[in-house]
Length: 401
Image 1 (cartoon, one colour):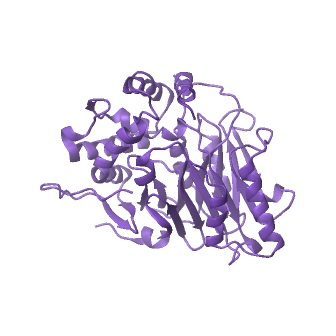
Image 2 (cartoon, one colour; image 1 turned 90 degrees about the horizontal axis):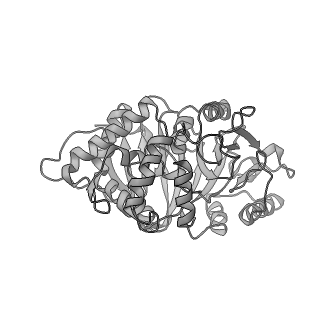
Image 3 (cartoon, rainbow, N blue to C red; image 1 turned 90 degrees about the vertical axis):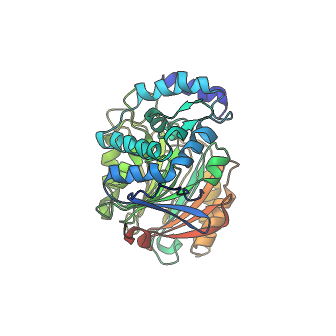
């Protein structure tokens, strides 16, 4: 998206390496940082506020890098004055936060500030970072469109009959987003409130994630219906986290839909959800507008003409808006049809090949998820040229210290 378009949106709405422990920095927090095959893994446990504090404490340096290296990068924000004069007032005016979300943001800020003190500051802004900067970071997904691609297969199209879901996350980016991705491991009180997600330091929402109940959720952008309001929005990454933490079992689609119908979102979305067993997967066309539909339309694989045990998603709506041509959507459909006609199940390796065929210049990572096996395969080329297997079950079974 070009800078003038980003500015218009603002006005309209107006990885990593472990944190180094220095002397005296041995504070006990509800978190731990490690690496797996180059991927930074941040484990968090305890209450939401305790986990958020640990997040801030352990990722403090990297949160500063996210602010200066992405949010305030000249390719993203033309000048720092625009950020302070336009973006921060827009965030304060147009977005709302639940009591728990605000408590987590505050705790994350405290953790980072306690860790760095006066060094918790932005060189680009030439000032100390504030709570509202953490809030702004958590609206990143509402600044731009995510030009993502995904599909799910099951039954005869899956090697074991269980669901396999694959996705590319495409997002305007800088080196920081390419190299500082984190596998967040959140151990909550229940399986659905425990999850593994792929995101960035300072973010408490989810973009791509699987919970302990084996439900996956993936964010895509899509042109929605016209805005009916200019305020009262929940950041969409936080809506996805709330939906993920509500979903389990065969009723997972209804669980997610109830959350979407209760939250106002600033932008149009295609949200891809899946689980191990029937109904396997669905696409939510979601823009939070239109009282009659509560801003949500559901697309199931059974509605497709070819009736394959598969569903695909890119960046156009098929029900809330008239469908448009999309080369990536058609290519994924062709690949699925070839596999179906050849009676050839789609393996993890084959899924990555299909994702490569629709890869964009701004693709940040590719993921293949197997809900029944509770595993995520992450390909982040700037970190590791080979897919890394994340054992979700083992990660969530780990114990805090």
